[in-house]
Image 1: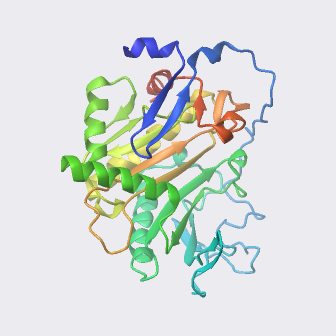
Image 2: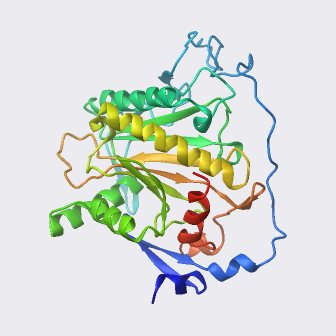
Image 3: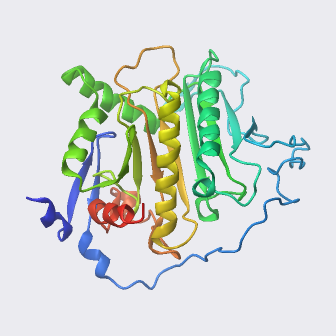
Length: 340
């Protein structure tokens, strides 16, 4: 079967990073839509909002006051899902098991300007965000009870973002969460068998085929993964095999900032709206081991499907069977590529 045939027939694609499958049904794009639509918020936000808990100088709901920051700002989440205090050991009763968790949750404000999102920020200011990500990864990872650091961003109200001020989060914890663990297992198995990195070989194949490449520069490639689940899902992969983001050089940080701006601008251009998404960086655990097999990468999971008001829902078959998508990764990449 050749690639062009996959644009018209239902088929499954294998995710090399998780060992899971996704059902692709490109013929369904012709169906009419009479389901739920989302409202579009196009109103311009002010540069400063006196009611915003994250703006410089404002008081947060916890009573803490933000400094009058002029660049990035990070603080421990006032209502973190994880707490640093150590609790008692595992509990098991029959088939019921409990394992206490320990960690630290941080909030990172990307900019003091309430009106900005990543695609609107200057490259040098995005570099400052990257440098803070690096610092937090190393600082949190050095705690003896932290074995994994998850950096992520929820952008947009429909992604559960409770505050429109440009910000992301970091959850650092004792255990290695499910998604990162699956990717670690797959990469380790490939490295053990082939003595080289899984994502390095995958990237080489994608660069040869070009069908799913969105944009690239000297140090990074942005693409729609062959196994993408979300309609305009993207992944940024460093060309160099690096285990974590702290290994980036000054030149690589600039290149990463540039491609971050490109892909977020491209998403905004798909439906001419501030595109909602969840993004996250998967990288090596911080448990003191080498993790040569790990190749860090950043993924974007945007939910919009047909327009700025139609969202992809993970329901029905996706909940009880496996993920499913309508537009192919190749068509999504072609549309995004034209917008970079």
